[in-house]
Length: 228
Image (tube, rainbow, N blue to C red; front, top):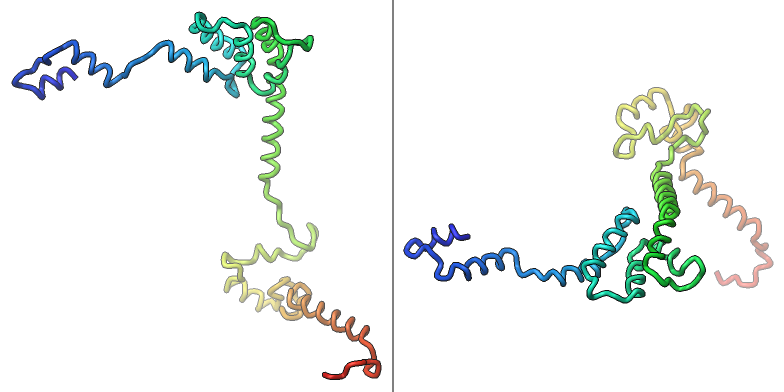
């Protein structure tokens, strides 16, 4: 910044007040830093990370507490801050002391949390494994087989379809030469007579419904209204 100033002010290369120029340059590039405020910010955001070991959290907590030793003296404030920063499962275990009473000393809860950490680690590992297995099973694609079973010789219709969902010209010509049905790809009948043709199923359902209605219909001489 000093060299840039000298280059831009060739007529008077030196700043009028060098000390003020230095101060303004430092503040403009780095800002004003308040160490105590930084300590409080660290204390406020102190948390045990998802993959952070309990020993690392203990060290960070003790360092933050040392930086604010003159401001934080109440033992219960220290205990509550330590407990609130633990991971959820570990925090639940440390709600009270093993005797079911309120924690009296910070060193006691730190020692207890450290001893319980391997149990929590194992629990977290099981949760991750279970979630991974669920994702793996849910992501598997179902194998598409033919309706005739694994021992059937009927070829899969999907395997013979082209990219557009229809038979290609080459496949169509081959089936016509071999006199195969274009739906089930078997000889002996045409497409309109195929039992797998959805249209035939619709017609068959309609016939059954008509037959059922005709069977249950009353005789003509028993009809009370003949307006139509």
